[in-house]
Structures are given as structure tokens and as C-alpha cells.
Length: 354
Image (cartoon, rainbow, N blue to C red; front, side):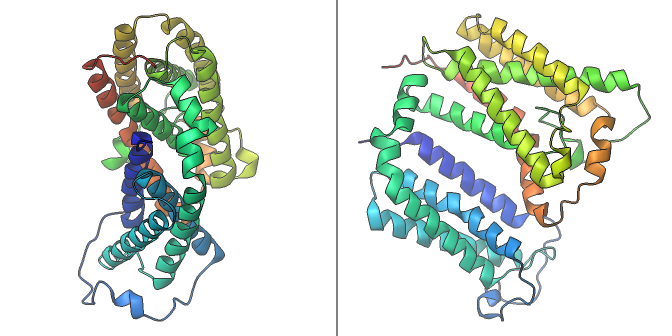
């Protein structure tokens, strides 16, 4: 039995996401004149909603789960459970202490207790499922059969998982990650013809779809039904997108992401992706990188999309503010992470499945 690099990579990425979400918006740092850990002995906050409790529980549940999987097989059972819960508690207390220096955040001992509960539930699930998932379960067999061995493919799967996560951002064009304008200035400008928005979203959607399909193809094992796998990946992405609109915006706007440009881009991108998969590995890597760069440029030059303006005008992030900040970060950074991965992958010799 060997440790799972994929589990460790997922755990590391999730820790980074937890830290960012806990400290968002990362501005206005100031010393309030109190101990950073004064919140531990402070009275219970007056206003605690069920949403706050559930959000803090759910936020640390994957932490406990991934922590146990990352420690397996070196630590198992109650030892892995204890390590996950104690490290989760330490991380939560440090994040709440750091929030003491952020005027926009309110540190709370109740949040720590909820985080601890979530880590405990996740760790308990992890201890029950670790051997099944990592040793003899169907996911282990699927990983071994469908994808190339080694940490190169594991990192590719993490990049693809982050791409699925970007679909939770309702403010972006379909697959239109990499928009950096919000970090510097709000997008805007003079009115443009409707056809311009359709064309830009179609090209952006198609280019990113082909790039993601090619990325998936270079980590897939030989003789696998890669086109069917890409269709499944696309279905997952559109499913996540639909759920995001149903929950984060409004249920009646569930398919508002399917604008004319998005529909055209999906059709064009799927056809182009199937054709591009016939290229040799080096050609697929180069084409994926070029398409990612081109799509990112388009996203940053594009004016605001009027088809989503009404829907997003009704969107009130409110309680989802921290989650919204997290999805914006991942959405902005994803093309650059994927591009770095493709360049790194091009320097390495591919490993054949055993």
C-alpha cells in the first residue's frame, strides 16, 4: 500500500482555499487592541443563523475527509481521525485569530466549534472509506485504468477538478475563466452590438472547452474512450453551472447561463475538441496552451455581457460573500495554473499505464 499523491494534492489545495475564504477580503488589516485569541473566551455571539452553522460545518467537512486520505496509510483509524480533528481545530483557531485584524470579519468561538464538528464528521467518513477508496475500491480501479500513472496525471486531475469548481461562479461567461479586471477596475464601457457579445462568448466557450478536453486527453491512459470521458466531464461542468445558478442566484434563473453565445460555443467547441484529439501529444499540449491564452485575452477584453446583466443584477451575494470571493479567486487564477501545468507537462516524458 502506497500513499496517494492525488489525495495529498487535493488536501493541499483545499487548505489553501480554506485559508483564502477565511481571510477574504484580505484588506483593511488593523490592530484592534485586543488579543488575537480573545474570541475564545468571549460571550456567544448574539446573532447566529442556521446558515452560519451549516456553512462552517460543511466548510471543514472536506478538510477532515481529505486529511485522513492524505495521511493514509501512514496513519489510520483513530490516529488519523485525531490528527485530522486536531489539525482542523488548529487551523480554524488560527484563521479566527487572523480575522481579529480584519474589520470586515468577526471571529467567533462558535465558528471554531462548528469547524471542529465538520472536521470530525469528515474525518470519520475518511477513516471508514480510506481503504475502500485508495486500496481496492472502484475509484482506485478507475484511477488506475482510465488515467496515466504517476503524480503528473494526479496534478492534471486536480487542475480539472479546479476547473469544475470555477463553474460555481455565476458572474463569468461560460468557461470564461481568467478575468483579471475585477482585481484592478470594474468592467464597463460604451454600448456594443449584441452580436459582439454572442461572438465573444462563443469563441471563449469553444476555446476553453477544446483546451480542457485536450488537457484531459493527455492524462488519460491509452486506448481509453477519451471522447466519451470528455462528454462526461462536460456534463459535470454544465451540471455544476446549473446548480450554481439555482442556489446562488434564483431557481427560476437555472438555465440563464445558456445564452446564445454559450450554446454556439458548446456546439463549436465539442466538434473542434473531437477533431483536435487526433493530434499527437505534443500538438495537443501546444494547442491547449495557445487556446487558453487566446481565451483569457478575449475574456479580459470583452465588455459586460448583457444576457447575464439582468440575472446578476438581482444576485445578492450576502451570506455567500466569502464563497463568492473564493470562486472569483479560483476563476481568475485557473487559466494560469492550467497553462503552467501544460508547460511543465511538456518538459516531461509521458508514462504509460501499467
